[in-house]
Length: 228
Image (cartoon, rainbow, N blue to C red; front, side, top):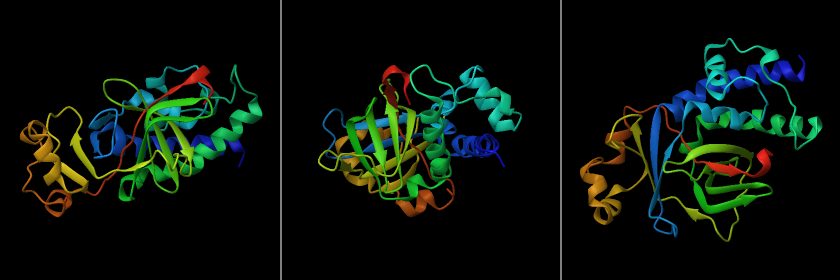
């Protein structure tokens, strides 16, 4: 199997995971140690997916995702070219990304940390989250959108904070009705307006997650010079 054949297969499988974990849901991420704002809402669009693969394509971002999702993407639909990096550098980046794309399927099952104003090389993000295996950077928009995927925990230990609560809602709904991690009680005391429109403080995580088998999400970031 050639490297491009391997990439082709992995990004098609990754799109299915991305759809199930990110594109179908929004997430609220809270830490009492956030400084820029009290909590963040992650709302990943389908056309964010190409950023996580590292490949270049002449297709629109939405068309690229649609073709990955239905399995109709051809090897001729993407390449490893970049105006800012050599093909060898792009291939190296893509190789790392396809190794960790499958980890999106379990990212919210791990103990997560976050770093505001995250920077790594030429990548600058308003927020990044990480466990020990994967770092996801999110872009600075009204709702955070995933923009980059890095191998291992790339957060600055002196700036990283523990995420104390993750809530989830189905895309398009107003209410966050599922607790993924944490205790919602203190959060609801601080932000009763959010709880009134979403999760009830007397609902336990076990009750809310009992019927939820798909647990996942992440953030967004700006890319300088489109280098990653």
